[in-house]
View (cartoon, rainbow, N blue to C red):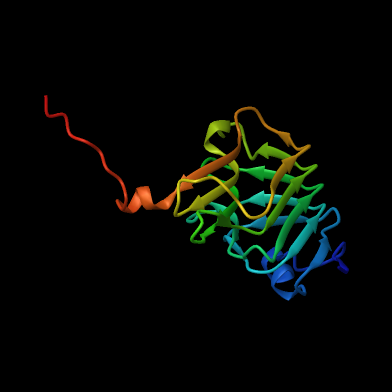
Length: 178
């Protein structure tokens, strides 16, 4: 894989940088500050190194919306990340196969520093990686690795959400008939 260097990128538009990168490239963001105002869809292999990412999300409170499959990788390392209440750093949309295996890309979030954007942030209201799946079986095709990060107090490293529970399918809540 090749490495793009964006140490003096005047645009500071992270979404554009990712969109223009070739599949499989790693991007060195240098010491630049990137204000993320909209969720960034990830649909290829990409690596991000360094940089200062600041959440300014209003609607969908997801920095990286990962839509790629098990053939891809998503790596973020050595970044300083400021998050707000309700933010999810990386939302992984798992696809289920017939064997209850969740098809996800290889995810590696390492050596980053996750901090609250201000003193009003409640750590428990911030999630680093959230996996959404249609099955309740937590068995993934590729590794989701969240290692050696500095995480502010209370922030959740990982959250697993089953979307079939939200839409009411395959849920039986027995009534109390006694």
